[in-house]
Image (cartoon, rainbow, N blue to C red):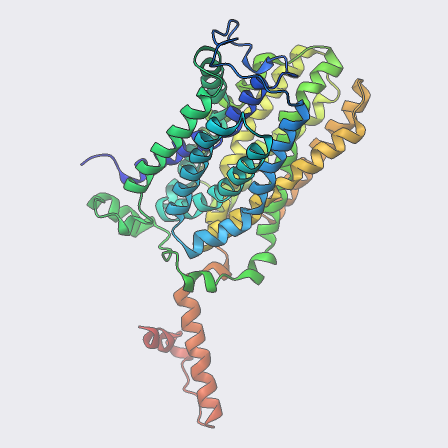
Length: 485
């Protein structure tokens, strides 16, 4: 019978995120190596590089701040296409958008390998383009999940797919470190760029927009999707035209989800960019291997949390709403509490253990909020995901506050961490009150809206001719349904 087609979609989604988000780490490590002002901390895992002083070596007379401008260009492009990416996934093929994102970014990486040494302007432009084309990937994935995830498997499919995102840093660090030291300065760019291009071509050949469009779907899988599929309409101009923007922007569950993403981005930026400095200022030490270990543990918890919640919901132990709230309260609530506690810890060992535990538990929360757009509006999940993911601006606020408050003492870090943890905890409470796992009324299948519209038009016609409108109260709206059919 072969492998279930939805399992193939999940595997390729996992690999897609593994490569897409690996691009960031690869570029950062290459920058650390080629800029003279750096001390090559990014490749210290490999002590003796064999390319030093050879034709495969490269040292650029750029400042460290230059690499920061490249990162800024990337994130500006990335943020710009979040919400438009959600719209595009409703208007055009979400699978083509996701695969195209991988192909274009991979092509940029290969181009970068040939051109980086000639001009920093070229690097700046290419990094902006990469951010721009990658910004559509997460909104597009929400549409893909809407089509390919049966209701009882949503959380696990999302967890398995997105776990590639969190494992990407660790894998890219090892691959790029070895390739840079023993092959050439741009080997990492070539490896990941070519992998991205190949993966995108496989994606285009294998992944269809919906189960109904896949001619190789087994009878068993067809039955599953008939029973538990979202039954969303294929992306088109008509679907895009009917996006209920007003309802989306005034929905409390959507705003609760957006706030959760803002504070999660805030915390994530603090952990990635500020926590290493916290360990240096407070304990006079660095966190070493801890920078790569939490994401691995987080990926495990994402998968475990997704499977656990799916099983509890499937067995009707809890509702979908309770499942999503439990995921976020357990995951992000624990993370928020641990961030606050870190401000008062006096031991390096205790702080390190708490950091690992907190980031591991965060996986529960990620398994909840990444799937929530599909719960709320299967047809418009990409739009919600694009809106929610734009909450990445929380990372900007995080770094600004840390920069304003930070001093080389424990007291300043106590303020930073208490503020960060408290804001995150506040968002968790708001989600616990206003969050939902139910499909919203404004996101019901389009045919119901058409039925209503036809009924309203018919009523208007009767009223305009002064004819009595037929009494259909006993028919429970069957007249409207009959007209539509």
